[in-house]
Image (cartoon, rainbow, N blue to C red; front, side, top):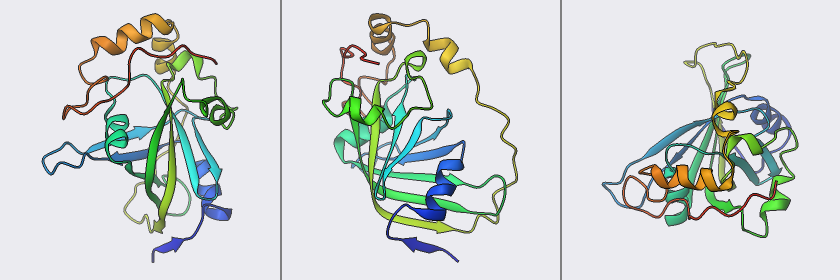
Length: 195
């Protein structure tokens, strides 16, 4: 049976931090808006900041739906599934915000990710989520799958970009500066990297 938690600590924190993959879900306020669901990986790109706050590195990609939705309304759900070991699913429902490179908090937040070099991935923001509702449920229907390793393709693709070419890349993509539903996405020009 599912359980509700007051904080992210102990066994719950251990489970979350051990998962190589998690999912994020966001949506705009408009009833006809596009719901976004994204997988997130890369070892070291997720951190539990404190008992009520988690964060993950938002890397270069083909769109910025999560950023756009968070800028509009802040609603986000994160989900982890146990693909190995005992069955479990954990969801953190909360309020999120993208912290961009030029935000004074960026450097302090980045210190929570010592296990990954963000430079080759085109880091554009850190998504910070304050948990409002934390719950686990059984994962009886989640299949067993084995984690082998992270793909190297993301770093290989974006390591060749500097700040100027990364900004140009984002400007060429249809749904980075503006979401699928026309909401403001990633603010451009991209601030210079300090990492």
